[in-house]
Length: 153
Image (cartoon, rainbow, N blue to C red):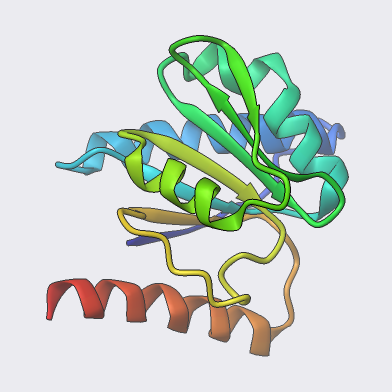
């Protein structure tokens, strides 16, 4: 997988900046990928996850992409781009993992999915959008590289 580290713009609106960064990173990642893109967005907290998942900016600019929001506060939700419906996977970890695996293209919003050791088939990139200490950043990079190494070996 490719690793992207986001740097916020200077509009002063963190939530708008975050949505724009997700869309632009996904588009860049898609251009450079020869396979369908599934990208994890490692973002800051429930407020950001809700905004990115529920907001029209990401959906409107990436119309064919399924979105997943996974948080301890709200469980796991999938926005299905084809139908515009939301599926609630609360308390059904195996089901949302299967749903992600079966998607052709997807963005998964989560606060700390990589550090929790959840391996998801088909992930092509990770976008880090939260401030992490050096040790945490090294751990995230290590997990991302490990996923790539395991698939290529």
